[in-house]
Figure (tube, rainbow, N blue to C red):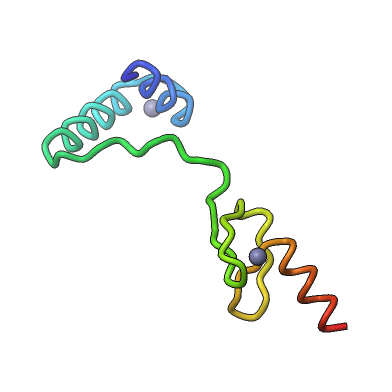
Length: 83
Ligand SMILES: [Zn+2]
Ligand SMILES: [Zn+2]
């Protein structure tokens, strides 16, 4: 796990070097010291609840309608009424 993290850091930074090592160690130490948990790998899409039907839908399928967040079904129904 930590090796994987290190490799990610090195890839992000471009190369492995002393500065990166110190930053990496300091970050890990800070995480331990503060009792933080490493963030879980980000999910690509967050799930958002449709304002109209309450269905949870992937963020990329949510359409904004004024300040309502609608799932595709509700969005299409809304558009049908609007036209
Ligand atoms: Zn460097
Ligand atoms: Zn809906």
